[in-house]
Length: 489
Ligand code: BES
Ligand code: ZN
Ligand code: ZN
Image (cartoon, rainbow, N blue to C red):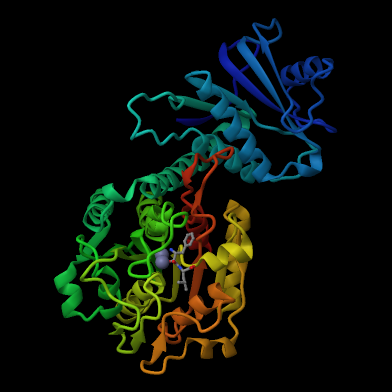
């Protein structure tokens, strides 16, 4: 669907040509495009300022039915994310006027300081992700994704970056898969349904799939996870996906929180907080989609994905505040609040994963705390780890993919906030403050000396209002981040 091309605009007919324009510098060295930009800049209403737009129809200069010129603003503001956003917006615009295809002009020339691969990658990501609509639940499908998106580049780049185009398509298809899982309503993704959906797609990519059902979880003593799932009619599952390429030496483990609906349990959430809680399986969605994606990419590292999948509901069989449960690793946990359920399912998944797979590095991803959203806002994930190098590597991948991650501290003395009078530890802090940190410190008590990091995506897992390359709903945060990170680790 995404293709690099280098047609002669004067000879080959195009439906829609879209050109990004810089306000203060030239960013194209294709003479036909420069001509069109000059023509646009002669108009009073177009200066190349960010979001300026002009459309020409049936020009003599090029064989395009329409040419859309879009302002990007000043050169200093043009970075990969600006190009991602430009491409996403361009594709969405075409979709809204029901056009089947588009040709996007890629900037080039000496003023552009971004390396070509990063620029192409960003534009292709924006275009591919912007071309997605989640309209499964609408009778009338108003928007139709484009069938073909081409990027206009120099002739020598077509072959050179062809592989990159395929990679971007694969990774972004993974992001879209995660987005759709997250956006699916909870009545259609009960633990058994979500498990089946993951297993079916994983098997297609020849991943090893194992599922522990409730009976097996009881036998293996997943006490914390079972307590969280106890209130729901749909019983918990632990899903494990394994990708083991030949010759791989180390194992990286990814663990994702999979609460298909977080009502809060007996500590029921109030109206206003309940409505969004179908997204509480975003961590598991990111992990499953990442494994499916890296199998397609044929990555050279062994990766296991562990997903504890439960529904957190209040009922006569639900766990209660004050209950004490025995976790998989043997420590007892006092449930101070049934709404702090994510950490309960994660500790069992983390200790099981470490015991069984002895991974070189283990990273969990979870919509874990509202406190993290208060600390970092809705667009940035929190990263918590004792391993500074691992944090740096994660932050770097976050920069590259614009799935931004910011480090939060892990102060040793905050651990005492998790003390329980009766059990080994309590699942909530005795202080109102620093909730993202105390949640991570709680997890840290169950990872031994493994090289571990925790990513809290409560903020960026979903959005209420669409942006340039993502519709309202799940964002698929984590998939592009992990695909980049797994190559670095
Ligand atoms: N799933 C929530 C966290 C969350 C909040 C995700 C907002 C996405 C958006 C989590 O299970 C939760 O309820 N956490 C509580 C913990 C508290 C009871 C210690 C919270 O953050 O309030
Ligand atoms: Zn909760
Ligand atoms: Zn939750």
